[in-house]
Length: 521
Image (cartoon, rainbow, N blue to C red):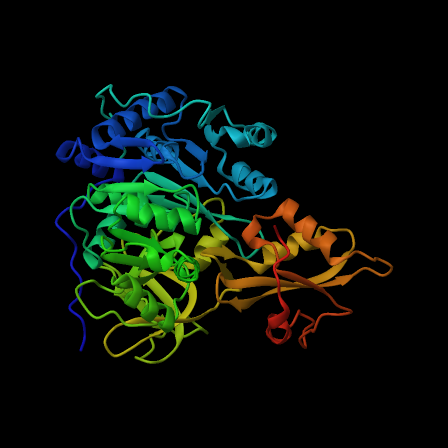
């Protein structure tokens, strides 16, 4: 039976700043943000956003970019909305990124203002100077806090237009460099309503957010979702099982966004069975496939369904979800969001639409699709063709219109919900003077989805141990990109045209996967 196509909800906003202003108008005293002992209602939230936006405008941010390097906090939420309300393009940077990666992103984005946790200030100072940043604002406990305007009663002025650029979110690049995805206000705001069309929320939900709000998933399923339903966003600094379980009970969580890493990790924890999940009625999963056994065990233990979805940064990010008003199909990422068209096309040309059950590349089009990659016209032209976003993922539809992701066309891994491009890891390994050749592939991991594994050929006479190469990776890569294991070998397998044979490497990695233990701290 084919599901009824989901419909857009009645509430659609020009921008997410309008969305927040509407929440403050209709529910001014409702609790908006919770971070530890700090709490902020919607009237105070909007005033803080307006006050910070005025400050950013005075610094010349309108029409420019404002980058943020902030862990989950009240400051991260006000910083994001403040940048958008100031008419700037927000550039959320991942605090897990290594200095080398931040340097590349800052130089490419050239932000007018950089807002950072004070702990990163000394590390960022030379990078900000090299990128020509006009002003660095340090925030956080013991320093400046961004809720100073909570009682001022001011509102944002000169709100941005729907067609203005809103976000510049960086994702890994197949060339070894991060790519900046440019999204308009209309794209991200419409996508919030598209998600709502598949997964309607209740008024005043209480949403737990342990995923980074700098990540597209954290923004879509946390920051913007909470404001849409005029609910409470309960922020945790990071995923720590004990803290998550305590927050579920203490904060009476109703909506629980997670990932395979979170679901499997929590069920393995000693306190899981004693935790009261009675208030939770909905769970979301993204970033990587969730096994049927995990879904079954979670539903039996918690009593709430897990809705799996699919998307990517280039798509605002939501493309599909298992609908709340329909069947939840294990192994499927659901049906296309409202106003979204998804096709399976042949891998060779990308132009021939395939039939039900046939596997091919997934392409999509809709109002949430990116404008392009910043400063990368060639990659933009390759990814956006004739109005379609070519995702690089291989999938198929069943007869009921449910989408299944089978593999990835791009040479990309998903480690704990984060995209990892082997080429980027290889470039770092190549930069070590002892490395002659290297190839990086992924192996399946029950906890993180996948783990990168590197094979390295050393230069003649070099006697560098694995630990030294791992230390080199730690200094130049975010932790989740660091190989779980580095194998030093005499030679890499090659194809007939002298390219590294990744298929053979994956076979090597699969055969040795049982011995893998992560050596990173």
